[in-house]
Image (tube, rainbow, N blue to C red):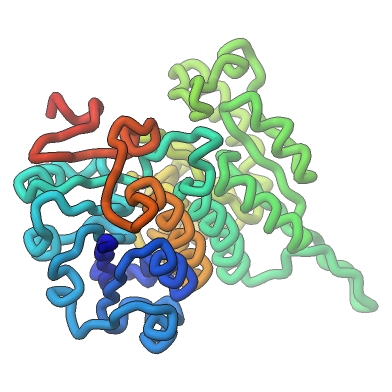
Length: 378
């Protein structure tokens, strides 16, 4: 008999995504799994209950019914106490668990004897590309950031030539050229803006320029070594940060839109834009901070509001992928589908190889203990 999968309606404030779509439910059923969907789980992402039924899921009245006997729980965000306590010992939880900021959740999961996998920790290796939720969601966040900025800007982004005169193209500056930043560059370029970008990783320069944007950075010896073996940005020295800040200060005051995307795993977001730099910008300029959930890259940013600081609109919307919920859910659910394939055998029964490097890398708790080395000491 195949494992039973539970998918609940997300209860985080402002969360519109869902962890399975009718498409992935159909494929889970084809793997031999039973799927229980809480009624209304997909409504906020435009996936009605009837589509899940047609795909082969049992649509149940509440989350208690969905979790009853569940072997695997698929989630977008970390489940709450009631959901975890409803799971049987040995059940598997898979989701964006925010492992660095969630000590209480780790205790809850270990006490419940639940095996938990944080999708943020899936190793960035070739075999795991189809499970890379950080990339799939960051891609959409970068796109949505430009859309939010364009909405708040109140002027046209492309150059327009009319009989009445010419409208100048907007100048857009992207700070951080990871997945979100590169998508923001591409989107702003498609909308006709003049785009510049910066990043502390040397490899980013070629990527930025390949999208038609100009690269802005202090390219000294520290810059040339500013990347980990895993491809993440290293935290830079105070001296380098001062030089880069001076360059950015001169550049930022000429910009119409700035989008910041810098995050360092497990640490507060680095401060990229100061109050003084905001004050130097033109009235009506817009700044979008994609790192607000980790404290923000921009001084004075406030979660989930558009703050007006020194005449500049500073957008601090958390969870931008949720603002494009249908597509975000579609990509995320496919990531989870690929991951679940590692947990079950050919009959659909739960049979994970916990020594598999992908499972081992993502596993946070197992058999009543903290399993990930990053948290064992805690």
